[in-house]
Amino acid sequence: VQGLVDKLHTQKGITITQKTLPGANHFFSNDADLLLQECADYLDRRLAGELSDPRPKRLR
Image 1: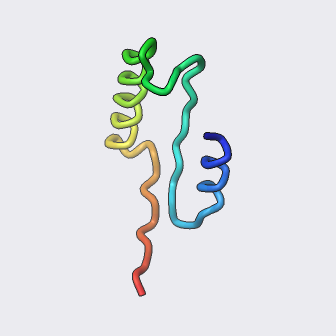
Image 2: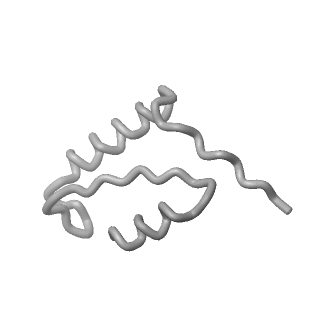
């Protein structure tokens, strides 16, 4: 996962927000509540304007 995040960070015009949940498995079977809380926190921050909007890509 970290390799993909590192690769995406090098791309221009996109914003990456990533957080790792320790001990989470593929289905988040033991961490569903934590996953939902992290998603809700991200959306709240995004909608409040705390996370910058990525610049729109120009189509050629």
